[in-house]
Length: 348
Image (cartoon, rainbow, N blue to C red; front, side):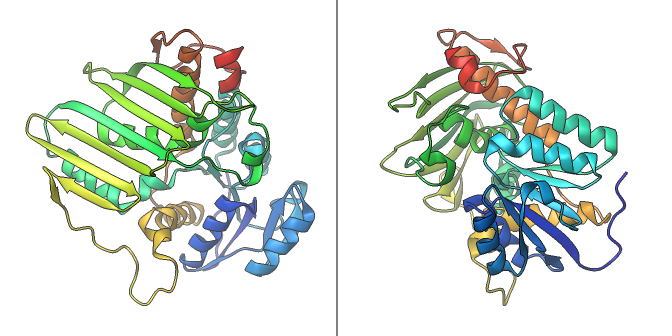
């Protein structure tokens, strides 16, 4: 089992210098006691350039943990499992970005390595820690059984980093689906038992750019999840309705919570005097990293375990498999092959 750091500061290395890595760096600036001693990427030149901005050293992926106490894995998903498992086998705690892995077998390897070595392995899904979702979940808890639940994540097609290459693992549902499904699970408050999905692609590489997933829960509630790249209007939102009320939460284009059609005041999560971008707090990145640091230091903290990330990936794999079977209902947990990527489950 890993020994928690005994000093007041904690050294967190960063794997990845793209958009996700940059956001984690902003979050680190808002968590007292964090230093970033090293940044690792596939390109040593990129690692050194980004490390210079945060006062660390640029290193190769193989050099991790580079004397750090913990590692944030924010590389493209194809390398998540290799990096996470390597760190866990060395007793180094990890925070792994969504999606957790590219196959369920890879996700199993991460969970197994964490359990076998007694090392903290956490899943980075920032919306789980967003104050707006906390407030919406509290309002939803006052309602009776849900009669309606829907989640949307629609935005322009990304064109940076690995998104500029042909996508072979998965498309919009693989990328945006983890956010939508995490919100769905929080608001549903019960376990899903099956789902069906329809995927479409207008891309040259054949990856999905629109997805409709219908999730059936034990209560027979059927929730709808709509995910798309290329929407003219950004819409990240969710709505839950029961016979005694309706709660709606919006993450983009604006942060807002409504209960029975009336706005619910959303207090600022930014500490007084902080000069860090408010979005780091409002979208859950700072509390997510703060919780991870608390666990690493042995004082405890609010985190999402990698097991939750595996459950989300399980639903995503089931959805791609359903789409490949003319939207047939697929039971959950997914009973299909664990060594295939979402795209392979969809198209063979």
